[in-house]
Length: 240
Image (cartoon, rainbow, N blue to C red; front, side):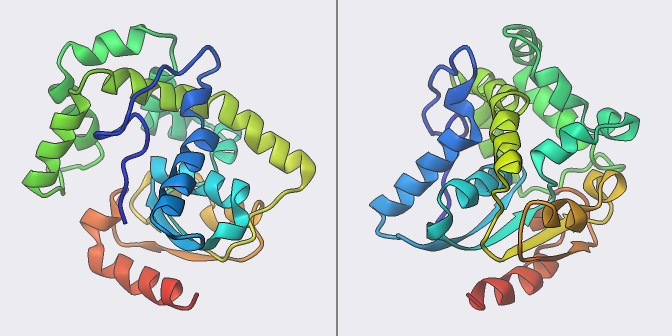
């Protein structure tokens, strides 16, 4: 099953609130847990990439009995990434620090030409400038980011990550709460996570059962290295 996180795609885009709590990964994880319950799945495995992987991390923390196995693609824990920020990471992930600026600064800048902003920011991840997405998928990205409230919701997601989400992560650390579900971490060997962090070490700091490897690609594992991704993820998921 695939679902759009709140604020993305055709999902609802509620006001974030003064503390951006409506876009906290805790709120988004609760959405996913409820969707799965409505569909009749009390226990399930999760595979997620990027922003979805951050939600999956919180889902496995807050709803631990329901998550059987977890596959996270091309992220390190949010708290580790902010606390470990250095020049190389800040230059590569500049959008993290732009999108968290108070509204409406980033919203106005992006909405001046939303489609161009989307293409320019994503294409810069590739030296050739050629995006690895199927044209039908790219058309959906362009459609969704131009929906009313979409840009503000995206910014609220990042603002929550730099605020209330860090508070939740620090509370877990202080209480020595850890991820219990078996965790597979995959990342792109040509990407920022490989260059700036030690993914396995960072996840082993917060989880009990961690394995993983880098794949021959950049950030978009599913689009750039689909066969490698399936070869790693499917045996792990089937083992559960």
